[in-house]
Image (cartoon, rainbow, N blue to C red):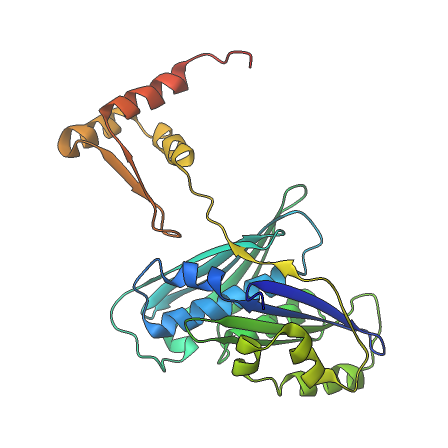
Length: 287
């Protein structure tokens, strides 16, 4: 059983589509980069599953960012970034101790969710919804109700090792009967975390919808991928004043840049710095 997959499915007798995400390796690669409290591991897992589900709704090539931000709580930021290839990464920032049963609203204080879609071609879109519901899933349902006005049901689960989620949505081009969507929502709401964590998607769907006609499409692989690199770090250094970088070299002997997402560290000594700024000043030459 591949534990890092996203499945899409349709109901032949209802104008409703569904998605099912099951994540394991990609989830652990995100939460194991920092010494997160258990509550934050669960939060990031739910956010990871949610972003995978949202990414599957994209009709373009590009990036997606789902951020939870707040003031007044122990967590200031939790974010998952991804793209249409289901390559995801994430990080959270927090202070102090966090109890495992801390409610979502108390984690962020005055919080909100920001969903940013950045197509490779076309205009950037950003939607904002308050973190005023008990769960990420309910906040996302509010987002869909406001931004797309499509009846949407979302279920999210995480335990520190596994993350999973399901999404049901009325097809935008159809006028589906509310009773169809409500019936399928009631069936989906019976899903248990341990079923999503341990069973193949085909068995999950059979258990939920064995009296429905479900058309399941080929799965899509989901993976952790960080976009940091030594070259990007060098490019960031190049944007700073050389005098500022020289002062750091004189004081510490090197410049070190770290990536919050994957915890990689890139070190540049005096020779590296000279080469970075020399390349910035060199004229372009034909390749």
